[in-house]
Amino acid sequence: MPLPARARVCVIGAGISGLVAAKVLREDGFDVVVFEKEASLGGVWAASRTYPGLHANNPRDTYAFSDHPYPATADDFPSAPQVRAYLESYADRFGLRPNLRLATEVVQVARSAPDGDRFRVMVRGVGEPGRSTTEEVDFVVVCNGVFSQPQVPDIDGMAEFSGRALHSSQATDPALVEGRRVLVVGAGKSSIDCAAWAARTSRACTLLFRQPYWMVPRYLFGVISLQYLLFTRLTELFLRYHRPSRFEALLHDRAAPLARGWWRGVSALLQRTLRMPREMTPQAPLPLHLENIAVVSDFYDLVRAGRGQARAGTIARFTGGDAVQLDSGEVLAADVVIFATGWRQQVAFLADELRRQVERAGAFHLYRFVLPPDVPQLGFIGYNSSTACQLTSEIAAHWLAQVFRGELALPTRAEMHAEIARVHRWAAQAMPARGSGYFIGPYLIHHLDELLRDMRLPTRRSSNFLSEHLLPMLPARYRSVGDERRRARGEAATIPCAPLYVSGVHWLAAVALLTLAWALW
Image 1 (cartoon, rainbow, N blue to C red):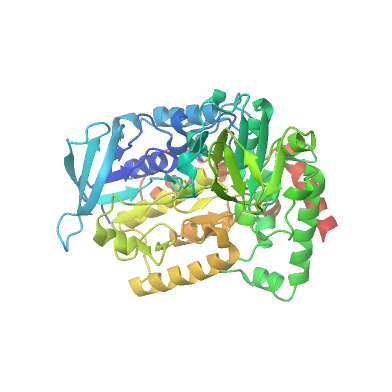
Image 2: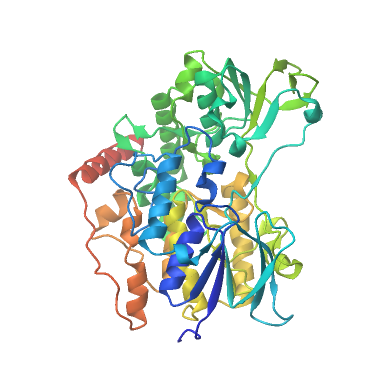
C-alpha cells in the first residue's frame, strides 16, 4: 500500500532506539522529527548519565547496529565514551542530525480529535518552562528508554544523612568516592561497576545486596568471548520460550533433566572461572534469575584482595550523621551511599486516554513488545529490551515501519490482547524480576524470529546449519532486512547484500563451545 504523502512521525528520544527508529522510518519514506530533552544524543549513554569506568555489558560485535560496525580501535567491551562516539558517528553517517531537536522535551502526546488517528504533540525547550509549541503528526514512536527514571528507595532518616546519597546515574564525578567510606546498594551490573570503581580509590567500600545474581566473565577461559555463550541458538535451546518449537518442548518436558544438567554445569563453570566469593554466589543454579545476569570485571578480585566487602542485607534506616543501620541491626559509617537500584519506566507525557491503552495492571500492554493493539498509530521501540538492544530495537523498527505502511497483517485486536496476556504470564514465570512488559532479555533470537516471520522474511540468517546454530547471532546477519523488505514490495535495494564472512577464529570458538556443551551434557 503506498504511503500517504508526507506522513509525519514524531520520535521521542535520541538514544539507541530513537536513532535507529528515525533511520528506518526515514528510509521508508516518512517525514521524521526526533525530540530529545537532553542537550546531546545518546540516551542512557549521555555523558551526564554515565559513571566512571562504565563499559558496555556486551562485546562490541553484539552491541552494534547491523550496518554500522564499531571502529577497530574500540575496546572489545566499549567504554561509555566509545559508545557515545559510536552513536554520534551513526547519526553522522546516515544524516540524522537535521531530524534531531535536542534540548526539547515532549510535554504531552494526545489525539488531535477524540476519535481521530492523528496526534497533537506539545513540546518545549529545556529551561523554557513558560514556552511551548504544538505539532500535528500522523504517527508517534516512543523511544524514551527503559532507563528513564532513576529509582531510589525512600528510607527513613535519609534526609538527615550527613553524607551524600544518590542514584548510580548521578555518580558521574570521579572525585566523588576518593578517600571516602562508600556504601553501594544493589546486585546488578551498575552496582558491581560502582563498587569496583569505589574500591580502587575509596577509604572503604561495601556492596550491600538483597541476594546475589549470576555474573559472567568477559572471556570464558580467558580466551572465548562471552558472545559464544549467550548469543547462539544452541544456548537458547535450553531456555523455555513462551512459544517453543517441537524440539524445545521435548527438551524442556521429557528431557528436562538434560536441560537442568546443562544449567548446573554452566553455573559451576561460571563459579570456578570467576572464583566467586562465597557471599556473592547464588544459592540456585541458572536459569534462575537469568534476567539479571551481567558481565563482571574485577570486583571479585578486589573483594578477595580485601579492597572491598560484599554482604547480604538492606538498609533499615539512616540514624543521623554518617550512620546507616542495616536490617541485621549492624550500623555502618558512610560518607557516600550510591543506590544502583534500577529504574522506573514512565510515559507520563501520554494523555490519560492513551496511557490507559498502554499501561494495564502495572505492565506495558504491547503486542510483540512494540504496539498497543487499540492505538496502531503509536509504537514503542526499545521496550523489547534484550541482551543485544541495538539489534532488537532495529528489527522492531522495521516491524513497526511495516505496520505504519499498512504492509503487515496484524491479528485482530482481541487476538493481540490475548497474546499479550499469555506472554505476560510466561514472563512472570521465566523472568520474575522483569515482569513489567518491556524485557526480552536472553530470549533474543526467539523474539527476532517472531518479528521476521510477521514480516514474512527468512529467520535463517547464515549459510549452513552449523553456523546458524553454533555461531553468535551477530547484528551483521540482519543488515539486509531493509533491502529484503523493499524487494518484497517491488522497490530497488539500496545496497548490495554481501555474504556473511565467518572467520577461522569464529569456527574455533564454536568448536570449543560445542565441546563444552557435550562435556556439560
